[in-house]
Length: 392
Image 1 (spheres, helix red, strand yellow):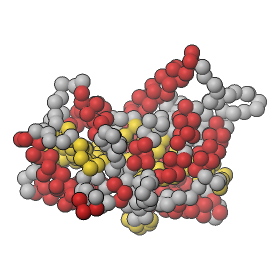
Image 2 (cartoon, helix red, strand yellow):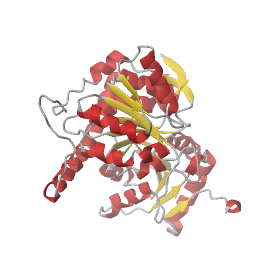
Image 3 (cartoon, one colour):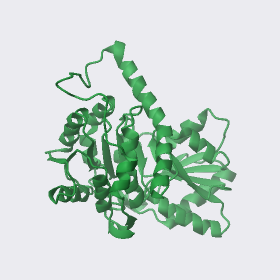
Image 4 (tube, helix red, strand yellow):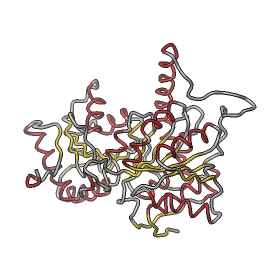
């Protein structure tokens, strides 16, 4: 039975069902409600775990390194400047192959100060060696939580992961969701029993010094694990659908792509708005479709080439920008196609920065602009969309 709850409550309940041994957190808007709800669960005896209050996000993730290395299932969440403060530790976690799961509530990075949503924070951490999967809505963000534990804790993967969800748009929305059944989650997600743990009776070291004769091999193994994660993400997504009856398509999902001439590529909560825009445009005879990227790291190169091979123009819409070049997804997508026989114009728009709304009207304008590429060619590969000249 569905219940109407705030998105943050749904995420906290999904974490509860995964039975983490240690939660370490520091509050920061707009993820604070998640950790407040988890604190209540622990205080009320609904979740049996060690809940650690720390003085910063750097400490929250650092403390989980010790807990995870000792064999505990661990959880944290953060956003924006908090994620930035974790930056050094993100690489330590992934390099030590610790399967920590974190909800990354996407929010703009200062300055200027903004508490509203874009995805610049997670994009800035895309090279940190964490799996990144983006949720379209609250239900998907909830359902991602046990899936990510199952993926990250696989002995052949052992890689940390982020469930990325748009701040306020998803964390503070009230919408009907199906709660996870804790008994089903326990059947779906086996207990975490790592082979190598910190144990005084069997001394080992984690994150030790590696001179140049060893460092490359560590990174090679980390890279191979991320490659194996592609198949694991798809398998776990399918298994989750079989158990819980809700599927999300693996590494990517598509919408109205069967004969699409204009293909939009995006991720996160804007996917719902894009689908609504596509429905309207389709009713007017415009052949437009959507490829939703779920897994941004690992990047679904082969799946994207297959899904987009018949499009006449590809358009990325993303909530980030790389100063001095273009947006991250646009760069990655062009790279994926460069050595393939598929020759399709690819253009990109950075939109929704700092929480600016991306509505159906904006999507229609983007499709109209992209459609002209087919006849007139590319005038600009990349553009920051919806700039107000009067504010410059």
